[in-house]
Image (cartoon, rainbow, N blue to C red):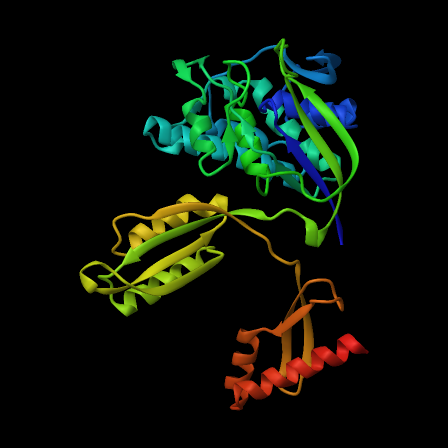
Length: 395
């Protein structure tokens, strides 16, 4: 099934206003964008888009103007502004996730609880409009999935509220842990914390452009015009088959353990799976001093990485964990229900329905429940469900 894909080409870094400009340049109506920003309920917040050139290439520069502002805002205040707005629920969720990600890295950088984080530059209304506008713009353009290139960070130093900072700024560096980056071009900050947070939160992964049929493209301009390169971010929008859509970014959390009882290990596995881990495995290993042990491997989404990592440390005896960024490619999945003489059973299907490589399997828990309920072998329920699905598929 085709999906609409947006590829962020960050050859000159990325900032919030640059992404906003690229979406407008690709066809997003400024009036539509202004109407979305107005849903924040902030008086005097307006957008201005103008055609510009950067390094000889044409693009769009979007500026956010606020009649009044107080840029020192807490994460809770920003979340309240977004939560009380009339924005679409998906836009609210995505925007809040971006700010929450920023809050978490700021808390780590300054060794304070996330509830005490106060944003300076990012707390200004223009930055709020950049983040909310980018999330709303992707929604308005009908984007299903976002994929991103490796990020050009720039180099040198940057002036911030806390003084002179190295590039990438501490928050940016933490946001981009596990993300492919490089430094090329002028000695300035090319990827800002806001741009990094948008890319990391909204993108499913990082790499070269996936196979797609491009229908739109746009260039968003930064404030500076460098003499030797175009200070732009490019978006490529097009159609991709679901099977060809880019893999999602995941984290592999691992620990080698040789001093836990089997009961404790089993409980830790159950807790991790109940708490949202994509997968958990225990692999036998032979450790130092010839002691038998196991490797605990947890597959986690980026949003769950910190929480599940803390759970591994709390529920096991390990003193540390390894974190490795990886990409996961999964076939699209769906559920259908079939009838058996023992009751209904859900069947999970994957791949193109009826196509080559399509697979299916009766749900274990449903078969297990019915087998116990009727006092029959598990395989009898499973086989009935298997036959019922084949008959319904081939009918």
